[in-house]
Length: 267
Image (cartoon, rainbow, N blue to C red; front, side, top):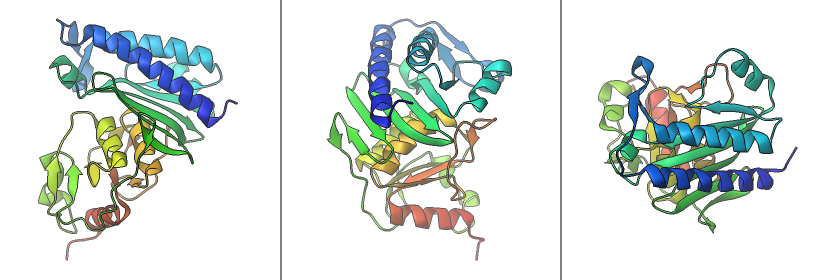
């Protein structure tokens, strides 16, 4: 099997190719439709990028499985990826609504997992020319420059990327923290920003798709942040139903306090 560095190089090149497609569609009249069951919008660009990535990546690594937001994950395809030790986990455009609205804050999120653990990941914002990268045990970088997560030690006053609904008192049996709230439309980008140290943490309490979390979670972790489910568990990938029970990524001291407040009973 190819090494982590070779896998990361493959993802970087593929992300740049995705960015070129996205740039051609961005800020133009778009073919947009709503996915079934309230799953959100999808554009022709999402589908074109998905097809390109699937062809390119699986041709380069024919022994790897495939999991993507825009590829049906049923029947033989589901059985195939579950039988593989390695799998691509891809969101062709994370932040599709932002992409439709003409925002530059959308990302391509590409990762590889081995036996349930992410080993390489890329979060690329093509119109911001920001390439976040990480390989397991090799650290994380932004445009080739090493990343270091925040060193903040307490949750109170920490800057957290999340939505206001995630801070409702009824979600926090141990008491809702008083944090500074920020937001970005792409969850993958939010997790990458934790790795960059631009904020102290990011969280979502809703169940989260693996393709939204895999690459950004590795970037945050390789930069020194702690990354877990909302209950403090270790995220595992390439599961039969590719959903994680929320995600909390933060500087170690901040993470410990957030998870404690989420899981401890109220006084």
